[in-house]
Image (tube, rainbow, N blue to C red):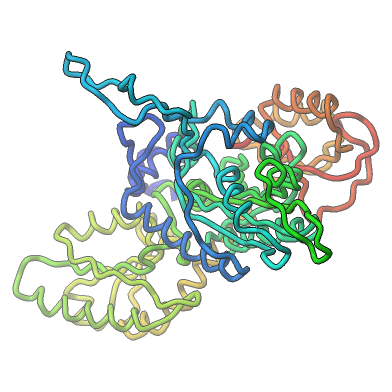
Length: 513
């Protein structure tokens, strides 16, 4: 079907990075804000985030967590208590030093020297330290445990290289923080929340992921263990889509989070933290987008069905609108994926074809056009965003009756949801290479497969310290990183490709965002 005229001017195959930026713009997801590294999330993009937030929040609360909110400003001294933590974020911290501006006499505003803060305040890069302070007050006895909290907030990390949704100086996220009586309970909870992320990514975002443990060098600053879900994008690169951390007693000791046990003794709590962010929207774009724009999985689509009446500013428009309103009511009365179908009757003025392609680029799962002839025949013209083109290179419109559309919309949306997941999972499995048994072979593989090489599974001996640093430098030279040790992987049965010592587990290496 080479005669297709796609809705975007750039194709994934030609320039994946430029294609990504085109989708963000043409799908009306976000725009630059005028502040370096910060973006304006537009209604369609924020609507997708609201859907992710709603579904994720339901999953989090189902595990017993309660939402709360903590200040965006954190005293610098809070970070200084935990050396590893502050070192990990120091280069990204935005710091407030004054609380007032004054005019300099030349029409400009400058910080008032008399308004310097006694202690600088860090603009929240993450909240372990300030939530630790609260936990030290909230936890007194074993009866207060486990303490399960979550907050939805924004954070600031001063990034040097930014890309909308994937890496911005300010982004939106949720961060969960918990305190437990012992190591076993905290570790179990760390993995439970990782499973929440896996389920949300796969069931709601239709984005297949690999869940597993991060190597020592990839741990969250101050953590004992870090676990992640990793998704493969269409260019073969990995995207870390969520992380869950077992923090041991490191933060509890720094913040004095202790409890009185049943015998009257004082014990340090074991804590966890975990989070996902608006980076997930970037993952959805690069997992499901095509050369016509975004394709939004129905579970997270703000509007799952869009009805476009072909209005002509004539008296007969009233009958056409009435026909479409009846269709809207019939579809809105149906349920799919556990919720009422979200359907929009788009009455905005404009040519039908232009409006259709706007919604194609945005990725609405089902687009229904209705003209006078459709109304006379009792039909509609229906376009599925996951199957846009017919063999003849034209949009693949179906013409079901109005009644059949309403009766079949639930199954159609569920089919689109599962189809997007299956396509992405099959693509991922086709782009994982196994059986590479030496560093030379790994180097040769990535030298020969330069465009979209995918991931490679290798065996390793789990080196630590200087030995691990050597491995990291070897991979860095190839622009590769260790993604994670997948849960449920086949047992190791050979030698480590890095150290040539007996392997103890399997890992994925890949280029990554």
